[in-house]
Image 1 (cartoon, helix red, strand yellow):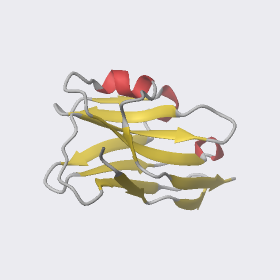
Image 2: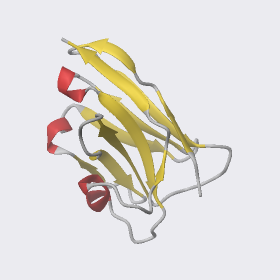
Image 3: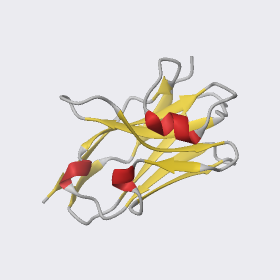
Length: 128
């Protein structure tokens, strides 16, 4: 089991930006696919963006053109740059890693699976 540590959430006004960060907790771990999910209390967890070991990325339609996922392999750190935020983006954001060697970014962004490793979540609040 690998624990991830995600951070960078906060409160911003609509149109603002935030950058989320995710790193493995105390271990050297390289997942073939990593991604970001978000969830509000009354909703299911949904995929936001993901990246695989070849650098291929996938995004939810609602964030395309505004969010950018990237991975710094040297630092073993995953990022999510979020620009032009809207109140609809408010949620708890979770970093995830897929240990499956056959994973793909498109599969990961489609939704969570039981095998994923998760971060503890970081709150993003966007006010109008």
